Image (cartoon, rainbow, N blue to C red; front, side, top):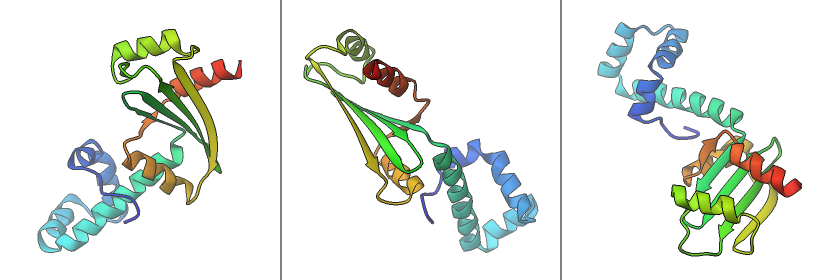
Length: 157
């Protein structure tokens, strides 16, 4: 397994896609039930293969990632050969970016001495999708990129 198995909830949300996946291997519901009952190791392999296929698609299409903590926001733009990053840091320790009030404070103070913004770029040290998966495994989430684009537009002027 290249990534990690989807959760029960994720499998439930992708029920139709999983049925299509099994059908593509000429496995119908009756046969799937027999495999689960009589060959659990084969069923496990099918779940793992499907999970990897889903992860591969998600990671291939991933463009933006975000991670919020109390005093930091990490924004990533995933390019083909490298990843661009922006780290926004509050120097006011009682500001909490994980609250609405903290984000409002950031809006009002983005270009004051109380906020630091660091921009960087890094080539992938491993295959792109694996690098993105590692970030997600560390708590980063997929995003639509609006915050990254807004901050980047303001910085670029």
